[in-house]
Image (cartoon, rainbow, N blue to C red; front, side):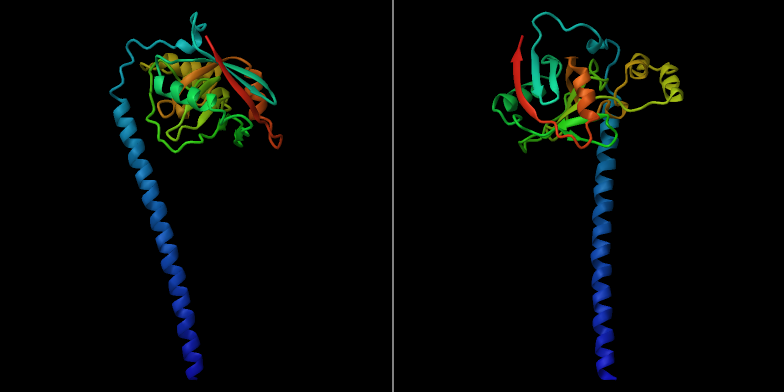
Amino acid sequence: MQTKTIKVRKSTVFLLLIFIMGAIMVTSVVKSYTKYAEEQAQASAADTAADYSDMELIQLAPPPEGAQRAVISTTAGDITLVLYSEEAPEAVRRFKSEAESGVYDGMKAGLYDLKSIFTLDSPGEEPYSPELSVNLWPFKGAVCMTEKGDIVFINSVELSEDEKEYLRSDESKLKEVSRTFADIGGVPNYARVYAVFGQVIEGMDVVEKICASGDVVVNIKSVSFST
């Protein structure tokens, strides 16, 4: 009888430990989510101060003469970007510095199930404060930098005809932006979250191929720059 009582107590203690560990994990998740929600709310609040009165969607225009360009050679083909150093100078500087050091050479493209983007993970740990220009948006072909310095190539999310019609009906101060998302595609959820610092001007078919490559491994061969 005494032995049975001891076993019950050990079992109870074991279950209690599991419960405590579970509670700690749940609390950690809740805190993480709360922090994320607060950061998003702060970002949204800060964004209300953005001035859109002189907004110019420069991605829709041909790149100006003498603009910086980058050619990313991959095992799926070449991608040529125009870089917006005036709008996002720190993102362009960081991308060029890392690329010229050779850290992207041989890197595997990161893929996602939605096939809307592919990424190149930053080798550094230095955080990046997004340069959110009102002139640059995550339209199809945009190249963005995250807070961790990762590079994101934008293909497009799938939008239904109803969703496109909703975007085209926008009469707010961002109606031109909404209609461009409806017309050419992109990832609207990244708007005013990730900094756009480049736009694909040649090789969009390669971006689409990489995003849809599935189990096929695509590697970066080299990155070069010109004006």
